[in-house]
Amino acid sequence: MKTKDILNQKHTMLYTVSGYTNGSYQQIVESLRRILIDIPDMIKNKIFKLRELGYGTDEYNKTKKYFPNWIVSGTYPLRKLTDNDTLTWSNIISIDIDKKDNPDVDLISIRKELFNLPYVVAVPKSISGKGIYAIILVEEGQYTKEYYKYISKLWKQQYGLNIDEKCDNIARKRFVGYDEEITKWIKPEDTDIIPWKLKRIEKKEPTKSNQIINDKNLYNISKYKNNSTNTDLTRNAIWKLLNNGYSIDNINSTENKYGVWYHIACDFKHFNDGLEMFIRFSQNSANYNDDIKSITKKYNGAKIESTIEDISRKWCGICKHIYGSQWWKNL
Image (tube, rainbow, N blue to C red; front, side):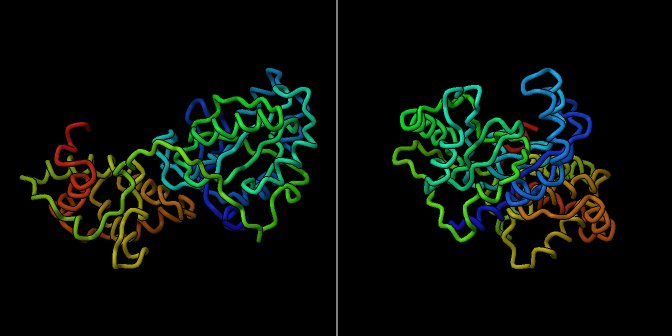
């Protein structure tokens, strides 16, 4: 894969003005290019002030929590940011080389050696400016833990590096850092990056939550008895899907994507929380690039087109297809 293709891949990114711990943050999708180059340049003065606080001090650690961070492995549904919720895989992992863990290692020299490895995309500085991290292309991102463990041991043997093996989770977040020479430490855009391959991986069957749904599977459940049951059960079906990352990416339709998106908005018009549903559905997509105002405008322009009975057959049918006939028992 070319460097430029890796830089154009999407990642979930989080911003906050009041701290992540109280759940007050904005979740968006950004390209790796913007995460490594553009956004750091926009906040570099804040990062400089952070570094002046002294690495590891209470004030430093407290302040750092207000900086944007991103998830290396790819994109995630709104507020579903765990290892099991990955929507799209970037097939990259990152490995930290902290100065505090490697006091006797010459980070300048090791940075050059790591950068020249064929599977390394970039070696940026961390937010503190005291450490570095390597961005590595792997064959299959869902096996991040296996890759991380193997490479950590390999680099210990080859370079004497001490790497924290507890940082191997798939949905690993990184704070955005600033590197004044970042373009020097990203491979040229036409470089062929060779993905790291592991010969022995115990592979698991993929879950059904992200599978593509063909048109013929949308109406495979009988009508429910009354409108009240239809509305309540259908709302539960929709939110079950949305909370598991369901988006336009999961629909294989003969209609163009915008048409499908519009008809989804029409479906959601039946519900009081339809706008929230539509925002979640939109943001779940790896290709999401609209702001909330734009999505709201498009939702407000949609009209109810189908009866609640038809909507029930559609959305409950999707749940039945993905989760089985007893999908509703664990709501």
